[in-house]
Image (cartoon, rainbow, N blue to C red):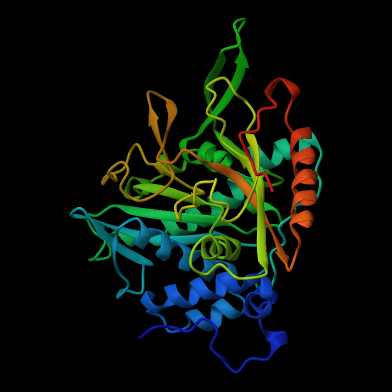
Length: 382
C-alpha cells in the first residue's frame, strides 16, 4: 500500500517539524510536493511509522531514506523492503546488496530540531580542527554504532555486499562539507599537497592514527576495525534533502508557474593542478545546463578489505573512491561534481530580480577564488 507523506496524522502544527510545514504549505515548494506525491506511490514502509516520523522528529533522517530509495531506483536497482533491517535490499545485474541509512544527528534528539543551512563563522584554526577531528568523529560515531549491529549475520544479508549510507545533520551547515573528512577517517590517510617548480600539483599521503576532540578520541581507519571487513563500502551524501526534490521536480514535469530557483555553490575543478573548487550558479531548469541527476552529490568509498566487494559503477554514485597502493584514487561517473550547494527560491520574481541576485552571487563567489584560478565555467546568464 502506498504511503501519503502529507496525510493528516492528527498532530497539530506545533507538533510538526517546521521544515515539514514549509514543505506542505509554502508556494515555493510546490515542485517538491509534486514529485514526492509521484514517488511515494512506489515507496514501501515496512515499519508503518514512516509518515509520522517524516512529519515530526525524524524529518531529516526519513527524507534521506526516501532520497536513497529514489536514487537507487533511478540507478536501475530492483528493491526489496520486506525486511525491517537493513533499510534496503537491492538487485541489479545479478548482484544483490544490502543498504543501511545512517545520519549524524545533533547531540540531543529529545525535541524537534530544525536544520539550519548556514554554519556559525569560524576561524582558520577552528575550521582545521573540524576538518581533521570533529567531522571524522561526528560521522565515525554513528558508523561505529551501525557496525555493532552486525547486519551481515542476518540470513538475507549473509554473504552479500553491505553498504552504510550516511548524511550529516549534526550541526547547522554540516551539509556544506564534502566527503574528505569522512574519507580520511575511513581509510586512515591524510594528504599534504604543494606545487612543484613547473606548477604541477604534488600530493603526498600520510597515515592517520586517531581523531580527538576534547576528551573523546577515536582510532582512524574505520575500514581496518574488527568486523569492518563485512562493510563493502560507505556512501556519503550531502544532497538527500527537500531542496534536492524541489530542484528535481522543477527541472522537469513538476515545474511550477511563478516559481524560480537559483542554485549556487562549489564544484570539482577538473584541472589536474587545481587546489580550489570552481564556483557555480545557475537557474534550475535552464536548458543550457545539464539536468541534475539523482546520484549527483553522492560518493561511494569502497572498502579495500571487504569480504564481499561491490562492483565498480554499480551502485549509482556520482563518484567512487578506492584505496590503491596506499593512495586514494577517485573515479568520476559524472562530469559535474558539486561539493556543496544552496538553493534560493523566488516566487513571482521578475527576470531583473534573478539577474541582480545572480550578479551578487557571482561577485561573492569570485571573491572566494584566487585570481590565478578565477575560472568560472558554471555561471548562469539570466
